Image 1 (cartoon, rainbow over the protein chains, first blue to last red):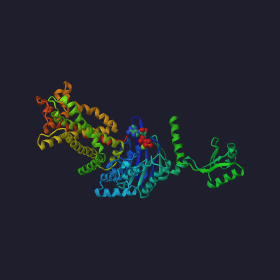
Image 2: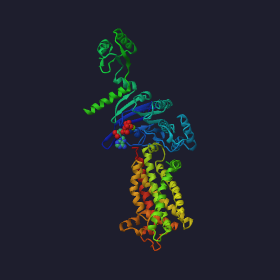
Image 3: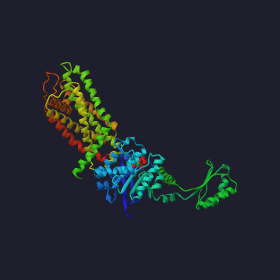
Image 4: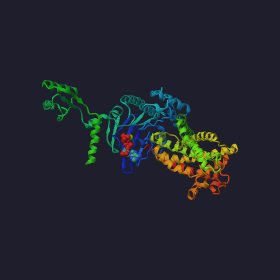
Length: 317
Length: 270
Ligand SMILES: Nc1ncnc2c1ncn2[C@@H]1O[C@H](COP(=O)(O)OP(=O)(O)OP(=O)(O)O)[C@@H](O)[C@H]1O
Ligand SMILES: [Mg+2]
């Protein structure tokens, strides 16, 4: 399968700030890449370079098989961009916003109008379509902005933090919209600070920090990098913590870690639900009262903290 | 890219800006409110002191062309502030990511500001008529007078377009422009005949293009100096005000159209 996006050695400096320090990434045609990183990591800079808005100081980039710097106009014809801040014209209605974009993609007057109506319907904006966007909620603006990126049905889509600032409900709605798009075969590069979002939407994840790629792989690969399952037990009485730890230690693949303050114990394990049952039997047999017990798989949050935590330590050293 | 693309794309962008004028009429009110205040202030408060013949009727006729010139220059600030806002909101990023003609965003913007200026000139002309201003020449001469004002304003729009893209904050554009625009529109013959100004200020005012466009408009509307003993200006810029205004506008366009387009290509949302 070929790559819809390919970037090699992207470097971008702003004075003494190195925004990107040699970023490589590829996105297979029809797949979703989640570009994950904290504030200031360089996510927007990557998106701006790949969408022809910014020239890097070094590096090469190809989108939809075209060289981004040699043929920017060709690339623009094949991409859709929804930037970090919804680029919606507040004085225009939703329809006028989309119609204008269609005209500027040179769809022609009739097709631009049709497409605007289609997208309003697709994004649940029909009722609001003829109201100035000024009156839209944050979620509606975001949807309108995303609709704007889709006007020309581009094969490659860039979404820079598409759900930042949305409430949980609007966020899951947005996820559903994006999943539907991707099911239709669109290649997507998505940036996010939300690990859960990358987990839900992305096939592959690239983690960047301080302008460098610090990890890449599927969500599962990244999680495995941090470690497997853990057994966590919280007891009712902190005095019994040591006993629980002694009882359960033989079941673990690593040493238990105790947290007196939270009256809890955590221990790396393997063996899933069977193991959990065995552990609970032992605790109950010993007559220890537990508040909570369960298996925890590492989340991307753990991955993220581990990875970015490490880089900060390196910086300090 | 075809020339047709540029024309069509510019028209699409201009339409967008015109919708804004239609939907936010406050904007037109805001651009005409202060010149209307100026008309009343100068005509009825200072007029008596300025007009040597007393009464102020002749002064009010003299004043209006100056107000026109000042108003269209002030209006250009809207170009700059509007573009700065577009940059800030990421709308310029969106435009730049589209396969449209890159020059169309600025061409469309400056063209829609011409339309805005036409509306502003209509409102100001009506105000003028109310306070006794009259066109005392032929229709064609008057038309040419208005056209010169619009050409002049168009050139200034490009200067402000450049500034608006350079300084991506509408507030800063507003404040910074007035530092330049106030002296430009006041140290001129807009409100008082030039012979009342002292030495160096007078030289500045004589070569100030705001003076030449005002002088040209006055001549073309047939609104003479209220002082019956005033002598015709001898300095070249004011003896040939139409030509001087056109040369000046052309020079500004030659410099600022490429500069603004260059800045557009590097504009970033922050
Ligand atoms: N125009 C600019 N001038 C100076 N520095 C800049 C500019 N744009 C970005 N930077 C710097 O480059 C670095 C990367 O910025 P970038 O916007 O790509 O980060 P990001 O990952 O998108 O962050 P966020 O999550 O906050 O959007 C930051 O340190 C930022 O301050
Ligand atoms: Mg960003």
